[in-house]
Length: 59
Image (cartoon, rainbow, N blue to C red; front, side):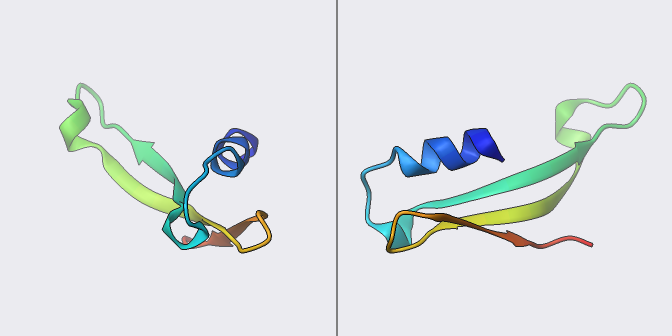
């Protein structure tokens, strides 16, 4: 989360266009990367004040 926060704060883009997410990937035994089960855990937004806001998506 800290690395995502630092990267988002460093972007000089319109605040509404800056988005981030943290994804949990699970690979089965002998699976190739395309067969991963991915689940979004957090979404991150850059607000007008330049602060990064995290929203939990998965339970």
